[in-house]
Image (cartoon, rainbow, N blue to C red; front, side, top):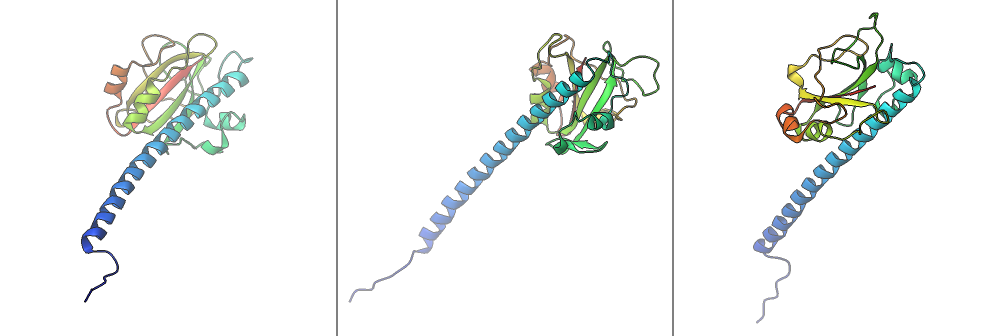
Length: 202
């Protein structure tokens, strides 16, 4: 007499579950990488758009006096996805600050300064290490066309939080004007999972 059994054995079911687990882990890893790349690309697009808009709007002024988060938002220089008030956020959920600066050196000007702000800073905070390295080494070009002066990168905990339109700790930009940080410098400076990157433009 023949015994016909239907269904799967326990071993077969465990094998199927193991395969599903491996595929799920691979899918999650791929999703995480895709999301990181999307956030990084979105951040680069935001920075490029913000810088272009600010330089265009202030082009006839000869200085960036009064420039702050609120001013940039009022002028329409900030994509609405970043925020509509003084508080701006990046795709990495960190703070974004637009500030007046001097062309030479790295001191940020205060609102009541008698000097004219000949440059400005765009600062992104709370960046993970990998994003910090990628952004700090990004090439924004050189010369009057791009207006790029230099990049600062460092661990968030060692830096004073910038106050839009106000004073903040001095930030040292790249040693060669118009050049991003080298990979070696970025690796050293982006030492944690909570970093700041600032770009200076004129």
